[in-house]
Image (cartoon, rainbow, N blue to C red; front, side, top):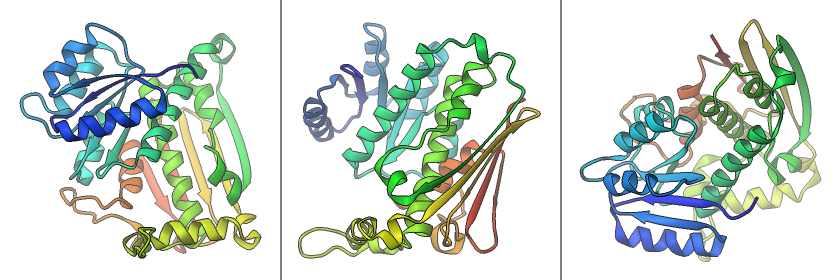
Length: 300
């Protein structure tokens, strides 16, 4: 993948030092900006693979910075980071062009995964010849993927790549769709297939390990759970993209896993996924037993 170039905007100097250490360990080239204006100035001096911005900053905040960057370069990947994002904040950030939104305290494993997913997606799109896809009218794909495979690697939706190459969607929407699929798959894997409970993330043992992570690891090593399959059906027809994900449990049981439905309510770490999906898709439906999510995006 080569050395990645990162720009981080955050007015918390302590946080900047922490991120800098992570970037160095990751082997990434980086620049730091203490406010939105400094970040804008930095983008005139060099190009970045990914720009990270805190949402709340004095002067030019994260939303304004996002707007300025996307106006100048619609294809620029921007990850928004927030310590107190609401459902409204997530939807607004995605609709204004954010490639992802991560919540504080930052999970550096999740940050690395997000950055690498975004860069890989853009590099793949840039490297392929789009000419052969320009006449794409319809396509259908069906997958049955074991839980252990979904947990081990990011499942890429080839049809979304093809739509990008056909010119049916732009880079920003491509990244948002891929992120929505990843969030839905993670929910399906953890809550439906592995039968994990969100509240376990708050139960931490004497060694600092939360019950959610511990049980997740145990069940991925147990064939009774690891070999359960998640079914994914993707179709594109009449400029309508439909993605259905079904698990063997009740991974999409909203009562247990949905965030507070008040737009201004703060998100918990495990309420982010459905807010991201709702902010990207035009239609969102669930089976009454919680076993399936159906996501629809109109591309006209």
